[in-house]
Amino acid sequence: MQNRESTTCCIAGGGPAGVMLGYLLARAGVNVVVLEKHKDFFRDFRGDTIHPSTLELMDELGLLDEILKVPHQEVRSVGGLFGDFAFTAADFSHLPVKCRFIALMPQWDFLNFLSEHGKRYKTFDLRTEHEAVGLLEEGVVKGVRVKTPEGEKEITADLVVGCDGRHSTIRDAGGFEVIDIGAPVDVLWFRVSRKADDPYQALGRIDYGQMLILINRGDYFQAGLIIRKGAFDSVKAARLPAFRDSLVAGAPFLKERVHEIQDWEQVKLLSVQINRLRKWFRAGLLCIGDAAHAMSPAGGVGINLAIQDAVAAANILAQALREKCVTDALLAQVQERREFPVRVIQSVQAKAHNASLNFLGKPRKAVAPWQMRAFMKIPGLKRIMARGIGLGIRPEHVYSPEEKSAVRDTM
Ligand SMILES: Cc1cc2nc3c(=O)[nH]c(=O)nc-3n(C[C@H](O)[C@H](O)[C@H](O)COP(=O)(O)OP(=O)(O)OC[C@H]3O[C@@H](n4cnc5c(N)ncnc54)[C@H](O)[C@@H]3O)c2cc1C
Image 1 (cartoon, rainbow, N blue to C red):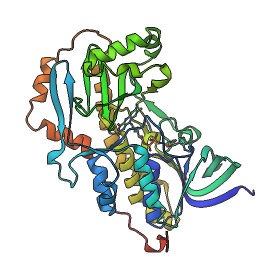
Image 2 (image 1 turned 180 degrees about the vertical axis):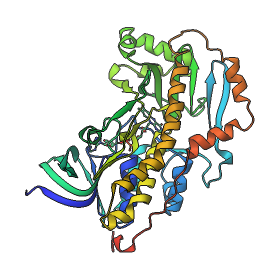
Image 3 (image 1 turned 90 degrees about the vertical axis):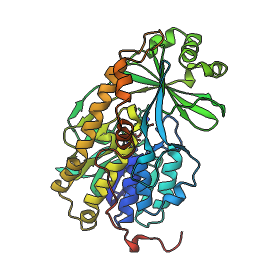
Image 4 (image 1 turned 45 degrees about the vertical axis):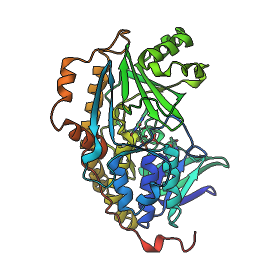
C-alpha cells in the first residue's frame, strides 16, 4: 500500500505520557513516531502542574535550567479554605529534591518544550493532525491506522503505545477490559480575571455547598467548580446569575469579576472518570497514562503519573526496542512497575470524591468537621502529603541512556 510506512515504536497521543515517552525513546536511539490528533498543544482545560518529581527528571535529563526559564509560578505548599478554616495540606519545602515546589506552567508550554528538545534527535518524529483511528492486526498488533489531512495511512511498528488519554481509541481498539471505579463528580472549568492582591489557594475553597479550585495563571484564574455528576443541566436551568452568585458565596473576592462569565459557552463541562485496565498490554501493544488508568483531577497528580509511566516504560523497553526483541514479559513489567502507585492514588481519589458528597450542594456556611481539624494537626502530615503529591509513590528515574548517534548534526 502506498500510504504505508514503518517505524519501531508508534505512540498514539501527544499528551504528557506520549511526548515524554517519545522524547526518552528517541533519545535512546529508538525510531519513534508520536501521533497527535490536534494541530498543536494549545488547548485549555489541561492540568498545568509540573511536579517536583518531573522537575527532578528534567534535571536528570540536563533540561532543568532551561525549563525553569519558561514562565511559571512556583507553589511551595498547597492548602485551602474549608468554611473559615484555613489549612495547608502539603508543604514541599522538605522534599529531598532540587526543586521543592510545583511549577504551574501551561501544559502546552511544557509539551512544546519537550517536543522541541525531542527534535534534537533524528529518531524523533512528532506528527500533529494525525489521529489514530484503529489498529493493524495480524494475530498480534502490527501498527496503527491513521487519519491525516492528506487521507488515511497505515504506520506499522514493532510496538504501538496508547497514550491517547481517558477517551482512548487505542484502548477501545485493543479490546481491553476496563475496571470502572466511577466518580460521583464533574468539573465546570472557566476563567476569571485575577488581581495581584487576590488571596491565593492552590488547592481550593470549600463553602456554601461548593468546592472551587482556583489555579493562578498570572492575570487570570483557571477556575474549576466541582459539581455532582450529571448536575450541569440543573446548574444551567438555574441560569447564569444564580451560577455567578454561587461563585461569589464561595469566593467573595470574585464579586466584581463574575460578570465576565456572560455565556455558558465560557463554562466547559469536564466529565471526571476513574478507571483502569485489568491488563495494560497485548502482543505488540501497550497502554500507559490515562489510556491505561483514567485519573480524576483530585490531588492534581494525573500528569505526574502519566510522566512516571513513560519513564518506567522507556527504562524497561528502550533496549529491547532497539534490538527488536520486545516481549509480552517486558510489557508486563511496565504494568507491574506502575500498577501499584495507580491503585493507591485512585483509591485515595475515590475516597476524596465520596467525602466531597457530604458538603457538595448543601448551600450553607461550611464548618470543618473536628476530624478534619484533628487530622490536619497530625505531626509530619504535611510532609507525607507533600511526598505523595510532589513525588508520588515509587518515583521513577531515567535509566534509558542517550544514544549519541541519534543526535542530529545540526538543528
Ligand atoms: C478537569 C481535569 C483537570 C485536571 N487537572 C489536573 C492537574 O491540574 N494536574 C494533574 O496532574 N492532572 C490533572 N488532571 C488529570 C490529567 O489531565 C491526566 O491524568 C493526564 O493529562 C494524563 O496524561 P496522558 O498523557 O495520559 O493523557 P492526555 O493528557 O489526555 O493526553 C492525550 C493526548 O492524546 C491526544 N489524542 C487523543 N486521542 C487521540 C488519537 N486517537 N490519536 C492521536 N492523538 C490522540 C489528545 O489530543 C491529547 O493530546 C485533570 C483531569 C481533568 C479531567
